[in-house]
Image (cartoon, rainbow, N blue to C red):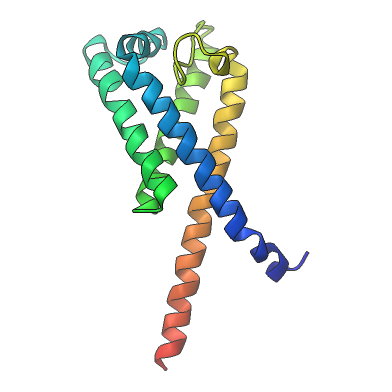
Length: 158
């Protein structure tokens, strides 16, 4: 397939990627906002953060997830939202890998304490890697679009 043919699918891929990331992060945030103690317990199970930090993270992270999901979904400050999601996914993946390497039995806590979406840590890891791939696809696509617009604006000035 030629480059022009591949570019034809870029808007469709952008829309689907934005929809997936936005909905996943908004839904996950709403579940956690509704049960902060369960989320704090999930964070504590990873044994990474000091105890005094767990509750503030359990209260603040869902708000950040919601904001980033909303930014990606609406396209308003899109790059900031995607960068936030990329950062969160990198931390989530690292924490999950560390817990798996240490042999800890953890529930992701992403969609509530007893969600079927969080039942197997290896499935959660694969899911997060797929979401990371979508976020990278969206961010790189946005950078390429900005670069193309910039080059076109420079050639128009001559």
